[in-house]
Image 1 (cartoon, rainbow, N blue to C red):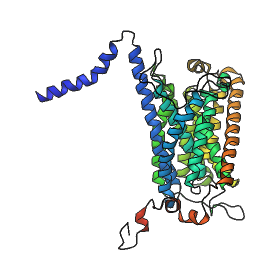
Image 2 (cartoon, rainbow, N blue to C red):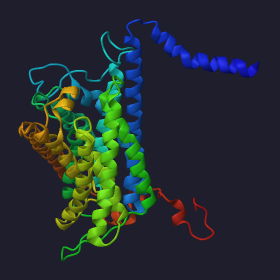
Image 3 (cartoon, rainbow, N blue to C red):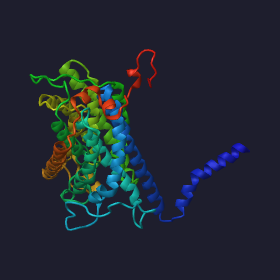
Image 4 (cartoon, helix red, strand yellow):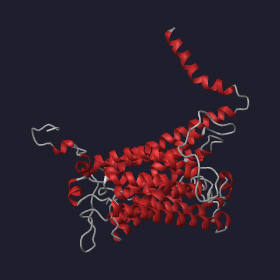
Length: 454
């Protein structure tokens, strides 16, 4: 009897939403509810990608900075939420104004409604959360250029400007009804808006901060500074890979006819191709199947397909991923030869792959899928026209140049006014102790017979 009662309660719990939605004969309430759940799930998946970035950055850097990496990520995501709520969202998706093609203006200190407005596919509040998660990811990518040598205060100041102004302007141009959107720029989930923007900011930071102590010798040769935990980096890639389905497939922001499954499908193919290509090219060139290159290749495949996942056929997704894996291998070596110290490989994984993924639409996008999404037109192979490729080139050049200049102004001013690199002594000791007073691995500091607190 008790089992039957619990079974009945369970069935009622499952069926209640269906019965409630069925009360609307048009099905609009059901569609809205499903869309809301889908976008909320996508937001959660993208937010959880921060855990992947914590492990990626911690595993790719030295043990003495691991606690700092983890703590500053959580703190800056929290700060980013407040800044995006107050200013960023209004600039990215604000209302009409005289300058609305270049910057949004409105919805500052955004106040989420308690329910969806009539005719909306989902409550606007869940869209805000989804876009906030994207802004936070782009910010975290930028932190790759700060790794192991920046003051904690520099993260606070740059977050204010990046999330409040720099990132939202690029997002407005492409996603918020801005001038690049009018031109038909195709960036479905953010190869340019999220990844390239973050990578360019990381590039400016690493150039202004200069290399870590011991990275380069006087003759220009590079020393390999190994990360302290390759298991962390491998696990991070898996977490990010899972989260990417919220990133890409979630960008459909609707259940609809199931198109989100197609987006997830192309995303999976490109990720696999990127990892395989990077491993094989490293094996062929160096004689060793380098794990770090393979992990970078997987992420590069994901970054590259982010712009094109809704616009290309499966075979093209594989090609995009394969080329991203090869590109990231050579890009890492190129930046090292240029004496650019990029501990997290943000410039290659998110920057170069972001550029390639955006341009790939101009080559591989099909007219059928462009019409389905409602953005731009088919690429060179499908239409024989260079028109979409030219739009994609504009997106990369203009967005990249804007973030480059804006980040240089902000970080250059920070360097002159407050200084944003730790001292040589602090860098040698590590940021865990010098910035926070607590080592990320306290057991490593313990002397024989001494407690962790001793």
